[in-house]
Length: 136
Ligand code: HEM
Image (cartoon, rainbow, N blue to C red; front, side):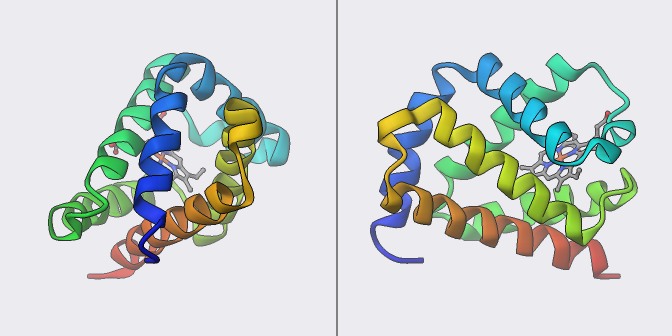
């Protein structure tokens, strides 16, 4: 990860975390517009689900400089996601919806550098989750 990535992601996340419920709602709106076929995978209360998602992204963002702690958390998350019916290709759709949400939430703060930093961080998180889902 490039040295600027972690501070850029952590700083921009504080702005999104301040509007977490709205950001979560926007995220699911973006996700289901991109791929309505993902809707049936989500069976629980969407507000509670949104809160869990924001909490997990926040926790991950806070631990980017401690990958030894973060990796096993993401591995467990990736394995559970396989059980929710999540497939590899869905990670790209979710990544796109996340970047779109950050763009909407950060406005002018969503600079090319912030976008690149989030793409890198999401890519790493998604890869760890996908690999764990395939591991025995
Ligand atoms: C970095 C990527 C992701 C993060 C941080 C994340 C986070 C979470 C969290 C924290 C939960 C709560 C349950 C648990 O902890 O096991 C959850 C559930 C779930 N996630 Fe994700 N997720 C990610 C990617 C995805 C992707 C790619 C999909 C595909 C559509 C997805 C679909 C779901 C579904 C269907 C549930 C269960 C919902 C339910 O039971 O109603 N997630 N996710």
